[in-house]
Length: 267
Image: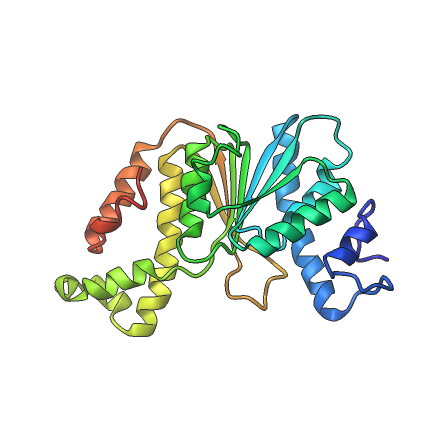
């Protein structure tokens, strides 16, 4: 079947309901598989760069499509201590993933019923991890995933940010104080407040990562056209810190009346 990568477990794809029981792909599942494979193309070179004994933590794992595909295509045949940890708040999904990993013999996969924030202090996770992923982790969970990556000294961070209304709410609240600046026109109308707030959130996330010494690339996930949330942020640790990025982040917060968000976007 030309849509499926060589070496991919057909049993896994059936269990993930990407393939039907008779091994067929419908239009929806073909699109889903294309999305996951497209993302895999971005992540595979990072895994190759990391070498042996990789610790990968996937936040907001959901049904763990990404974790299972990564394990099946990259980790399954490795003779080392590499491990994938899936973090998810819905206990029923954690249980199903645990059962599927056991069924398939994917021994170096763990699934934890934790919030992203709680995972930072959980003893079930290693003190240092190599790569952190967070795909469509809603609201502030993406920011918590960044904080997790910083606390765990991750070399790579891969994010597909999701809905985040916190910045928009603060912009809305402080609009009166900011009206003296013509920049307020960027978010004066409610629809613009929502859109600008979402865009600004990701800008601040990138600056935060840069301030902590990451080299950041922002691109579009081709194949996710049905979703407006198709921004992909990839960050690679390459220095201890970046003073200029930290200064720029703080300047933006001050200019736009977002000083109260300094703790979330700490640098």
